[in-house]
Image 1 (cartoon, rainbow, N blue to C red):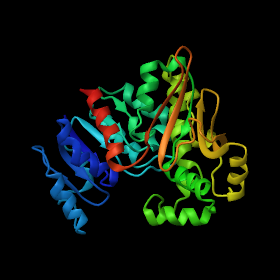
Image 2 (cartoon, one colour):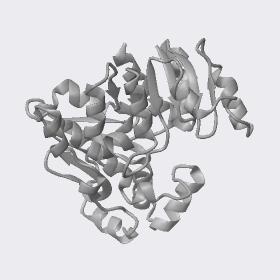
Image 3 (cartoon, rainbow, N blue to C red):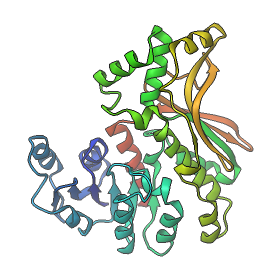
Image 4 (cartoon, rainbow, N blue to C red):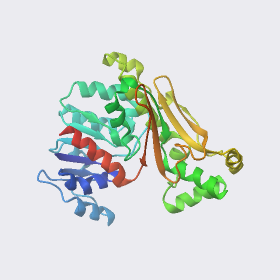
Length: 324
């Protein structure tokens, strides 16, 4: 399958680098300032080497990548809130050309889910977004395979940065500021970690799952428009005000603290929760875990790497395979 990749950050560049191993060809690759386009297939390694050297990816404008010849657009630009632009416009442009879209960008399906489904309904293209929730963990695919109508709740530890901070605080008895600085030194946390530690990232993932669950109960796009949720509908609390003493007290009772997100048909919530110290949700480091409550299968758990370029690219390329 021919792919146009928008975004040359960790995920976009990993998709471009790994596409050939999955039997696909990249015909366009763009970042925010330039693009390389070739209907016969671009040399992604050369383009990325130019970028790493401080030069442009290629001689084309970014819009030329969107207008290139491709079967599926991989939208891997940074997530934005509110109107979800420019990711949403990229998605719309591809669907209006009857091309498929695979999202790594959470914005369109977290903030404009009904709009995305309406555009998809008018197009010969399909939209997939496994990579928006849980990195390499197949959350959406598992919910779909199980039958979303029969899933009552999805909860889990969905942000590696927050989990690294909390698990290090608990293990070493260190305070929040100390561990956050360590996480930034290790590259686990961004220079501005607010998106992660304030719970926004986990909340967006839970909003997407809630929309999947709600969509399963809708018989029309009009019903979906009334049912769809956004980040504004979520109850969100971060970890930035948790003292080390709270983790010490929890440990005395055989428990620990994790940032847990939960999506149901009625509610989306993210916040610090007390969990059993050796329980399912007490994953350590940057590892993520998701629990799924199913009407007939009971409780299922899936754990893995919830972020990272190659890890998230594996979810993108799994979605591309579903399109074939």
